[in-house]
Image (cartoon, rainbow, N blue to C red; front, side, top):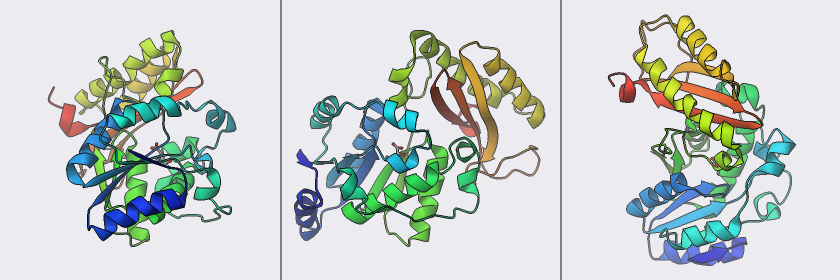
Length: 285
Ligand code: PAF
């Protein structure tokens, strides 16, 4: 595995790949890797001649400086995990490589960037769009891999590629879960033992909510809010039922042709956790 820290290091590997007409897949990450990332890498390995993983904790997507400061970082461990993963090049750029000058671009995603996550993390998706477009410019991958846990990020990145007329194919991979259902996330290591144990309730509640389809949407929202907020370790930020393609909130079941997804964000102490489940996956269980 090649470790590239500069444009020059990355450039020589990428030049060779393009010269040999070999496809390149990119898995963008902020490090603190877990099995969820490894499954993105596996998917990337199976579809491309070479896999590039980037690790960059992107400051422009953090609206809360404390969250940026506390974001878990463990490059040595990440490198040893990646050596075993089939990653061909690890790109670990410095801030000046990604942002040689301040990125002043403001993206308009038609309101999608202001709903759900956007309400609680103003500016977050603008920062994600800045870094992802920059990584696409540098790596010029054929395909890029993102997890379905961050479903709104996925929708934003799909819109971004359309807006930029980019040829990068966006591939969505399934959410990986711990044994008790908690969606894997780099932030899980920051939970206290009590928070971690109770965080399992998030996915369980989502799945139960999906099975309760038929109850009025507003009653279902209230039910979810009560279950989460009655737990002393958890606090609900939002629970929305949205169409999977446009992520528009649904307030009535009737007339919804798009596949529906239940999306949730919960605070466990200082840590925000998000998750979602597709109705088609769980409605009949
Ligand atoms: O999902 C993430 O880890 C980040 O938002 C991403 C896509 C790597 C951009 O910094």
